[in-house]
Length: 376
Image (cartoon, rainbow, N blue to C red; front, top):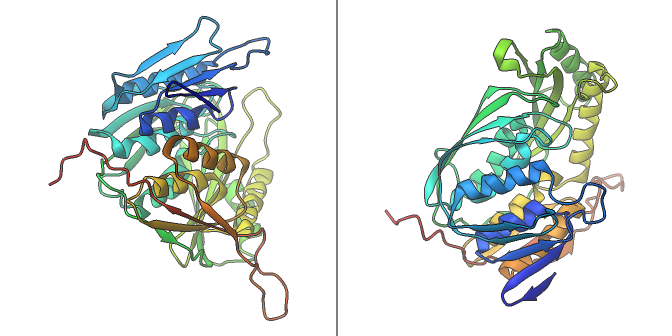
């Protein structure tokens, strides 16, 4: 990262969303160059162009300039507005790709967001709408973003053709409250959704049985809901998958999910998919922490944007995405986190109880205020 006349300069296509979202929140202009400049197909991909269009819809007065080859983007963010809009998400990435950015921006707009997003609702790469509803919203609620938060799945859509549709509502908030989230707690229940689109109605039941065969060895309180979409609600492509969410005694949520391969690729077996998802959830639980690895960056962002007070959170080992996110928070908000590796918990027999090393992250928030929201 370099700075030139107040513009933050970056190179490469990695962490594109991070940079655009943080620029929008901080109001700082950025220039990203050398985007896939050595590839056979250089420049922005279609899904990134779609993401830029989404940013343009949620802001007012933004200046976005893309050069002829698409290898350089200049972005001067405007006023974050929110409001009511529709957006067709490109099917190269799931709706979750766009929603991860939208949940970071929507609470700080001038008007509450009411958005209809269309595209792929569940794929192998991005968080599904089910995980966003169960886990991402739970993280937002801990910071005081609660009343009026809604995600409704009107239609599901699997890759490659999508056809899904969701309704997303988010209230606006003036200030975030500081957070002290230092007790992960123990797992008390597991909930999940096994979904299927344009395949046999028996598929979700097969997924549930295989996942339970592993999870029931550890916990009795398990309920996995089956959701078999029919007709227009099932999108344009066949697919199935499973999203699992574990809740702890301290009210924290840890998620894992798996989706079937695209049509035309090697066929996925429901039993294998169920077992794989259960094992992925076990791995996330083993990592420990108050949030799972996918939601580390969201929690750190909301801590950064809180009032000028101390916030703390305990996570599992930091993901590479989160490590880069911490660097970006320093660039855009001048907020740095104190990181402390916690000693592993030890059982009575002397064996380690926790998986990876837990990390305690502490910061003094930037005191961010949404000046667009009037004080009641």
